[in-house]
Amino acid sequence: MKVSVIDRLKPSRTWRRWLKRGVTLAFFVLVAVLLFSLARNVDWPEVVETLRSYSPLLLLAGVGITAASHAAFSGYDLLGKRYTGHELPAWRVLLVASVCYAFNLNLGAWVGGLAMRYRLYTRLGLGVSTVTRILSVSLIANWLGYMILAGTVFSFRLLGLPSSWEIGATGLQLIGFGLLGISFAYLAACRFSKRRVWHVRGHEVVLPPLKLALMQAALGAANWLLMGMLIYLLLPQGLFFPSILGILLISAIAGVITHIPAGLGVLEAVFLALLQHEVAKSEILAALIAYRALYFLLPLLVACVGYLMLERKGRRRKREEARQRG
Image 1 (cartoon, helix red, strand yellow):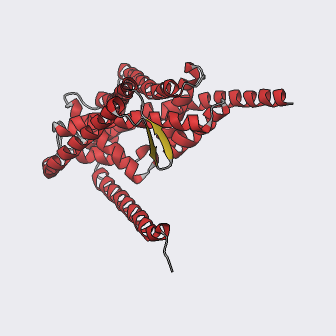
Image 2 (cartoon, one colour):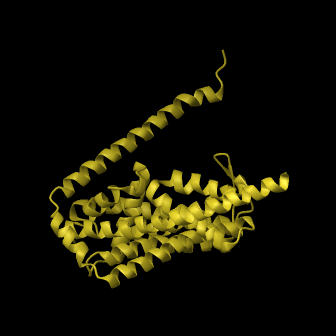
Image 3 (cartoon, rainbow, N blue to C red):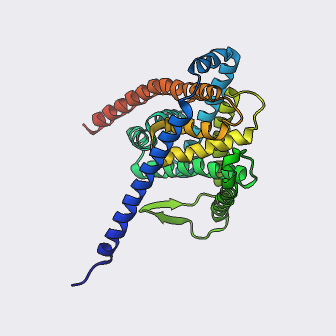
């Protein structure tokens, strides 16, 4: 009896799937235990007092940084418009992207990044394949900017680790070199590769020209820099900005691994673990609470209004198409 190649691969795939679930669960438990052990001795009245001490001018600056960051992220989809050549007006693309980003942050990538993006774009007349290509441009821009920044911070050891974590500095540096290598390999492929079409897990990816790839890197890096700048603004003065940025970048990956919407608890656990040797726990938690309010919740309120506008536009377009067919 012959055994097909697919049948041979099934046990391997099952093993890898369960290993991935096990690692995710273990990481989730580790984060929960770490967060509990670090937060149980927090002076919560001091957290409230720190929140009250934020001046209106500082909060207004925080709103401005948040708006700039969300605009940078929405710019990913403008690159997608240039990449695909679709005819939706730029202002509508920015509206869709900003709405999806706010829902993505709060409810997870499957809701905001994927399901909502496909729904809104297809209701506005774009095909599924076009939306997929827009999404690929957006994802690459986000993580290309991430890898360039993380690679730089980790490679040059700009992240000030606690003394108990110093043993991991070399490993983090090697990861940084790897991230920079991947980033430059992508940019080199966009410039020199003669093969422009690649297939990744059944999806067709067309390499963009180098100019568009550099714009992906610039927008992606700008978005992450602005996120780090907002947290830096809310923390006490005198800290080293690249170190704050590095902690944010580590917490982002931890959030992806645990699949927790908004990285709730993960962001706090990583910052408490890596920054408590420099800043009081109450000040760290106050800064992160304010960060979530400004960067997550406030844009979500605005995005709900934008979503209703887009849904109404989509319904109107469907009715017009039905009338034309009738």
